[in-house]
Length: 175
Image (cartoon, rainbow, N blue to C red):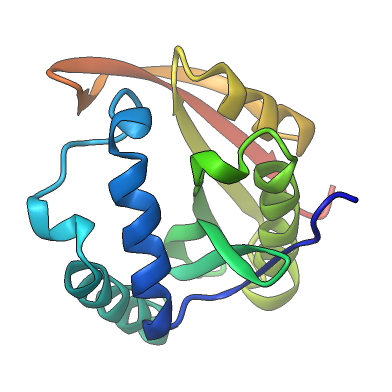
């Protein structure tokens, strides 16, 4: 039976399972994410990061969530760069799923759920995302959730020792 996917706001207690996933998956995520300092991979480093995310949430600039499969933390889904002004109302979606839970549909369901949060809770009009040009699984997740590519950001992010291009995605919410 497939596991149930849910999302919820991140909590300080999530630092331990997140750190465990990040330590185990450091090599798997190397092509897709910027290098991190050593303390990023510790429960203490994650607790500090979570504290910052929750401060951003209180300020209205981020909605930091965790992805749960059968009530176990298996990843994160975050809406960052929230611009709630009436003439902008947009946010940028980012997500990751631990290797032990990949290829089970959790990323797609988490993105669908966070799009509902963006529409119903955050009252945003536009969702944006970006992927590495080579990250085809992440692109499939976005496409299945109604995102369309709209451009390439050349030499936009330093990953795994070199500058990489990013594919930019958009979705108008409520459509």
